[in-house]
Image 1 (cartoon, rainbow, N blue to C red):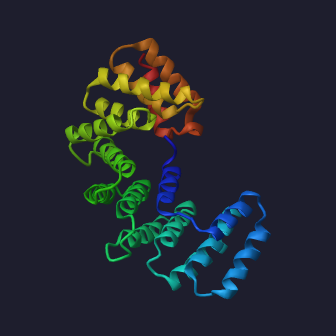
Image 2: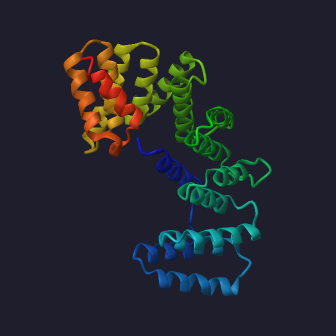
Image 3: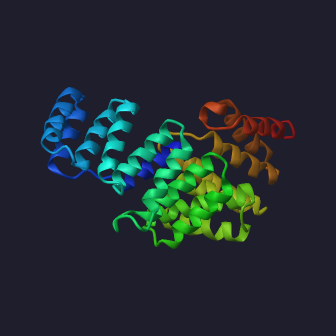
Length: 286
């Protein structure tokens, strides 16, 4: 699975769409790294329509491609001065705050996107799921659970529903924030809908592990590892989970192999220092 921050930023794009001709031209210029031409074209449009929030949003996108957070933030705030309920600008600004390690400000902006008093096309469920992911990132698990549940109550599209259910199942199982039987139901529902997603298989496998269903856990965790390596990737976390499940089944050679691979990849491939230590301690018992 991608990092939590990467997932948040990918999901945030669900709420942002640039579809007009000028937006297409700006995208063309930025794709070719012709940033001066992009700025010149959008500045020309802004000089003619200075109160057009969408134009300031486009200029913010150019700054974003240039990795100029200050410039992007200024233009997004200008867009919101002109149109306080602009969901695209709110989402982009919240995503910027995620990317610059300002989680509380990100949550506040996503909360505005989720406000039912805003525009009717605002994607409430996606925004609430994003809020939950940011809250998870800063260890506000109770708040995250509440927002995932609320997202699921907003009739989300299938992809958003899967993310909210997966994360809710994880918080229930890993952090004791809910019933394990409910965690199993949620995780199974996600895997049925998205059988080829390694991250979802890993969640279901880990929920089974917490339920002491080690055989079922190994099946899902092996699937997660195979799906990841089949695409040329690898995950220390998936191998760590698989190694622990194999160890519980006394499949010692396989457990040693997976845990050693996880330790070798270490924190560079997603393990926490605590997980590295747990893997080493388990290896010492095999």
